[in-house]
Image 1 (cartoon, rainbow, N blue to C red):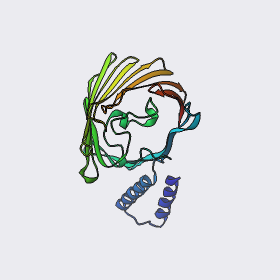
Image 2 (spheres, rainbow, N blue to C red):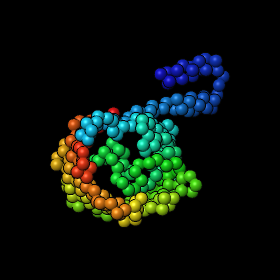
Image 3 (cartoon, rainbow, N blue to C red):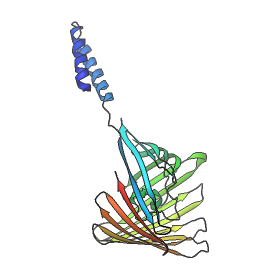
Image 4 (cartoon, rainbow, N blue to C red):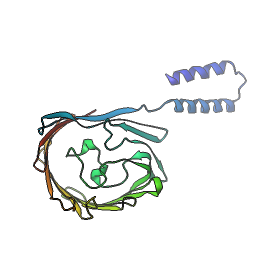
Length: 279
């Protein structure tokens, strides 16, 4: 429709400009082309997820993980904004662009931290995040990110010269055993974490070691097994190094089209059932 309108405009100009030179027409074509390009934009896309839950402790029905997001791009710049009703972790609102071969993110987003902190809730096996590593809270600022062969990096600068960073290294990958390592640090919170991921076929082990509110020897260990394309099992052990007992959580997930069911119990307590649907 835009091109049709612009073509009609060009035809109208031709009728009233019989003495225009070839150079004039070239300039007009260039201006019309630029105007057409500026009017054609990728429209925003809406997405998100919602989880309905049931907790056997107290026979409680409720809503778990949920978020609505709007994203798109225009002229080489991307944008993303999200809303969450209870706002436990904060809302995203940022732009993205590439400059000097480096990816840049500016606004409110999850600053570098552990992989569990950076993962979207809709992608996490357990319906709650690990007790160490950032808890998914959003930060303000500017972040640079990129990859150099097997090495990946994220560097964030925020309010008050806050500095955080994450470095990953793919030690080995292929059809056999896969191993990756990561180190993250937050200068403002004075915390750091080491991570290791090992996988072989349907088996996976993830370990996070570092600082928590209780001490600097906290550790989270997650073992997972994909039974098939539909069912998966996961066990999570957490030691906060604060004098409390180590906890053991487990989860069983079942994928059904656009939905995923999660059956989870925390440290042998009540059972929580959740069905999360993406859109």
